[in-house]
Length: 18
Image 1: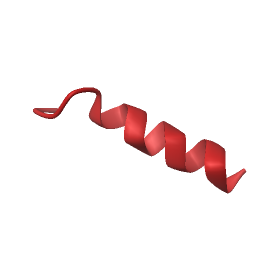
Image 2: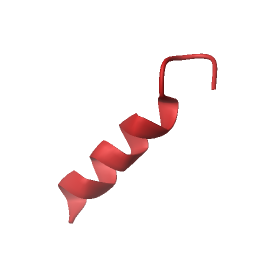
Image 3: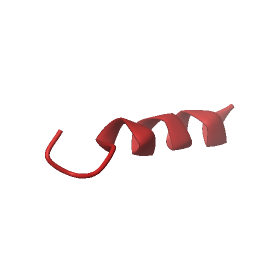
Image 4: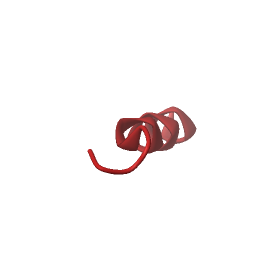
């Protein structure tokens, strides 16, 4: 959680997958 919005990266990948 140190980087800026680390969860954003996961969400972006998830969205791309779908």
